[in-house]
Length: 426
Ligand code: PLP
Image (cartoon, rainbow, N blue to C red; front, side, top):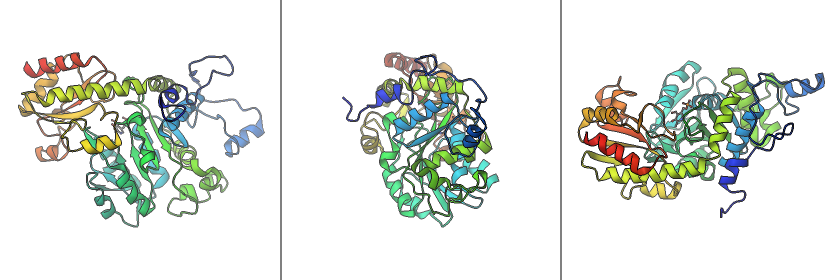
């Protein structure tokens, strides 16, 4: 029995959803429409003025997307969520609510490579400056604080897998500095780690990965933890200042502990535009119904594969926190006791050539850039995602010539292991 009711598996299936009032449809209908008819002029005016909740136009909200938002908010233990077109869009809209030109945020160096690019390059055009810190050394976040720092950004289980971050230690630094802690919970999913329980203020997801879980749709969410007090805080004018877009309304005062999710919708998504298609919301919702089952199986399979590879003659090292003796094993027991996720890296004794040979010889694994699919996936970063870097840069990024990243699927563990064995031996 779960300690909390309703339990996680019940929420994964039911949160936010009810039989359709008009038709009785039990699965969430796909409201494939761009816009919604108003009852009358007063109704329209109250929706546009944020005096009433309701549907206007799918770019800023849709009933199918609303079920996804409510479900992920419930699973994370947040107050509200916003579904958007991708994980990258969730990051972008989150920072758009928090940062002014010239502001800084501190981010962990160990992050998804796309986030590193986004922060280093794309954000420069907005005058948003990233300062890098080391998630293995929480004090480095404190050392990086300045009076322009507006947020801290970390991943719970960090890319390329095998890294468990001490969220609580970093959240204490954020709290002391009175800035929000944003946690990208993509690799763990709320089944393994709930960052709000460890002091996060905002959680973001690439739903493309484990939430959706089937490698069939791109989507993202941001979740409001309701914990940060924006009211009267001049550093965050999107939440604390009268908004010209809404006749001087102060969103932090009007919407209280879900003001961040509202600001992200009515200021950032409305004006910047990366909306999630209701069809993708439907696919992601269907995936989430089995999240607890899949995630446990991903972790159990990953531990079996990591254990096997750690004894394999062709493998020099395996970075998987579930393995006793791994440098993150103690943090894994504390933060992620049900398992250490599906994604991890291995080092091959044969170096670059062995990496290329492995990805070429695998048959059950798919050689591609995604993670978090039901299917087992593999990539050799040095010959693909990190190919343009120098050898020194590759090694610094954890993408040395011998490194291979695995995302272990939910097939039979014996078949996954047999495929690796044949490819390593070939
Ligand atoms: N965050 C993490 C941890 C990721 O792995 C990814 C994608 O790989 C993203 C964010 C970006 O998400 P998306 O590809 O949905 O934009």
